[in-house]
Picture (cartoon, rainbow, N blue to C red):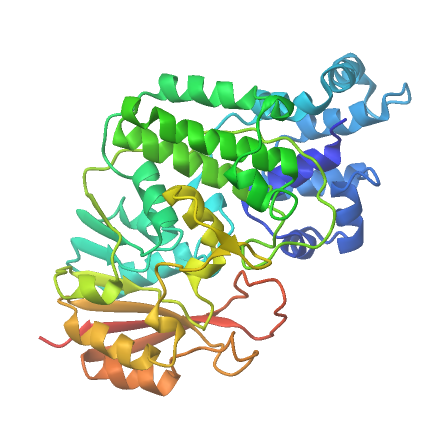
Length: 444
């Protein structure tokens, strides 16, 4: 039976909040929050109202779910007793299918771009970044985001500028950009019918496949892994009957939905070494749109810089030695679907494409070459203040003095900072983190 705890966890993950941030904002003990989400205790009414307000969620809907968990007659809100009992009856009748039913009934909206877990995501900094750009620049018509990552910055830039260039070296990010942004023909009803079929799959009737054999019981519960593998192969088998946009939407939809239930802390360098609790995979389409002012690339940023012309270039490179292609190897494998032999505890292929010089000791030279090759009026660099605060893998590869030296040669440099603890690999607990914006107005 799915409890109010499961529902609150689903709402929190959909909103993109770590449990620790919710605790800080609503002032509920972290242990209590964890027990509530794990179904080990019911939230009090006061706690539930705090959470409803924080998530901007309908209070009545959540109260009904809490009351239905009691399945008793001592209702705190007797005026909704009949409605509550109906919900409780549905939970008993439908079992594991109840949560998808609740999702469809209460929050049917498509998945937003910002809801993904991703190292270095700027989703919660985007408003600040764009406000700075708005106030410090002028006559910008073309905006280039050449290390786009989750593309949360691009997502806002699309609504502001005549042309937006989005680039990232990862295949999985590229397919996400195409699904969310690229102009193209697609039939929403057709895709919803396909998704409905996927949501009715019984994993007991599915054969073992490449994905389940390699990742089942590790990054995903085994039956979930079987379902993911089946869906991925089915998308590939349908490719000839799908438009390029439809193909991208389905793959991006799969990525976003399996992100929420991965047995990880948000990346695939490792999985959590604990038994995986079975849970349903219920797909919801991404919030796909069509934009005529977008160009999408999958290139090495330094190579793209040599042929790029843009009024403003936003640069958000890797900060440390952790390679994104390695951290998200599972998603790269899933999108490419070449089914290579995998090795090691994390089940990585022998050769991983897309390694970045920004994660090596050549980062400073690589950055200087990038800056010198850019044809632009403004350079906006995001780079945190990690310096030597963490272990060697977490420390910033480019020193502040080098950033100042390289950008100051190009023009007038301003630096802005804001306290911010970014999403990490799950082990860091470093204080006084700051995100900085280095904004350079190029000398004419």
